[in-house]
Image 1 (cartoon, rainbow, N blue to C red):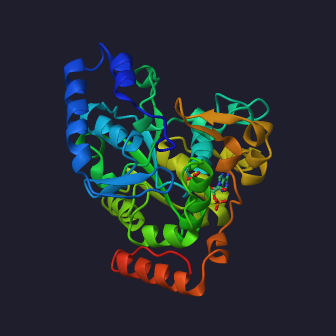
Image 2: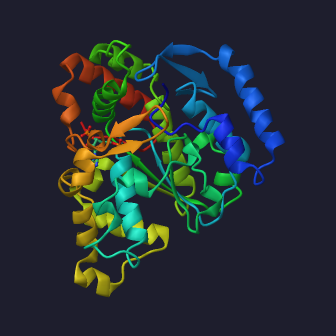
Length: 341
Ligand code: A3P
């Protein structure tokens, strides 16, 4: 059992990309994976038994590590690609819904919109899960990724004009959301991970794609250096003023809302369609499942828990809150980035 992302296992990659990517190169990546894996630092995992540390980031040893190596070695970006970059549990599902709807708003009507029958993850795939028809996707490709900015290949960040939208969230809410979600996916044979354990690991940076603060800072710095390429959002701001943020999103992605659309209330329609209340109450998100790999099937309802700002604090002790706030202040010192209380 591995990450909740679909597993880009090597046979599947070879089959899928046979003829498109040199199979010799794929074999080289696979050989390198097998060679490095046993020597990587290992710590307790949240959903899987272990996480391994590769290039400074903690990953599930199978899907996430293979996915990262595949992207670094083989992914061929297009200048029109749009990536939604997130640390798990910071608002990926919501951002996917909003972006998919904004970019495709002239294509799909609100009455029979794909989001009414498909979980947002089914509308916009993960890059590192390398869906088999990525090369066949029409431009602009909408893809999401959990890979830290600093680990992305230059072909994505320097040599191409791809655009990134990043969303971050208060670390206390991320930690609690992640702990609850991962325990739901943790195999029965592994004892559930306690909040105290999860807290300790999170503070030490040991969680999927962690350390969290490094992940956030990587995209934050990129957004300061290249604001035309990286749009940096906060979950809390999106909650507070969703219409304002959706307009910024449309503008940034090259799909600005016209005055006519604004006066017709298109922005508000998008916000309403993608709201927690609407999506979490749809039949597809209440009772269907998402097949992420042959072994991992996730109930769509797990992607929608409370969708609130500040809920993490109700699970954490005062001491835990103090410690995580101190780590956050220390890590973000001088960056210009701040989270709420
Ligand atoms: P909580 O566990 O705090 O409720 P991700 O999509 O990155 O996995 O993040 C999941 C978090 O986003 C969960 O937070 C989930 O409830 C919340 N979420 C999902 N859809 C949302 C939406 N449409 N609006 C606001 N929050 C949403």
